[in-house]
Length: 77
Image 1 (tube, rainbow, N blue to C red):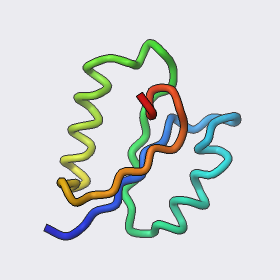
Image 2: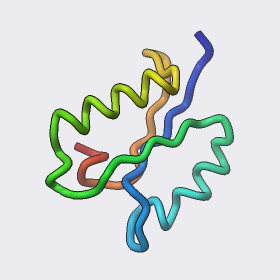
Image 3: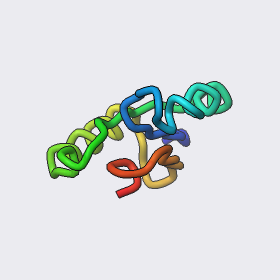
Image 4: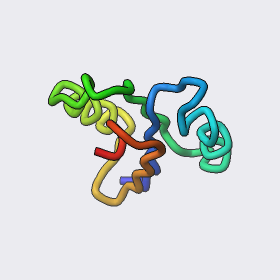
């Protein structure tokens, strides 16, 4: 399988890491898949993890993929 770079970011909002750096990172990694996750403690759930897995499968990520977590909170946890 071809290498896939996956870029993760919290849901964009004015004060998020995505708002500050996301667009530039996405442009620099032109072949990357952008997966966004909702922000906030209430989204630290198994359902959020399950959605992330579904998104990674859809992006054809595998064990050789690189994952960049942009932001803190849900993304970093």
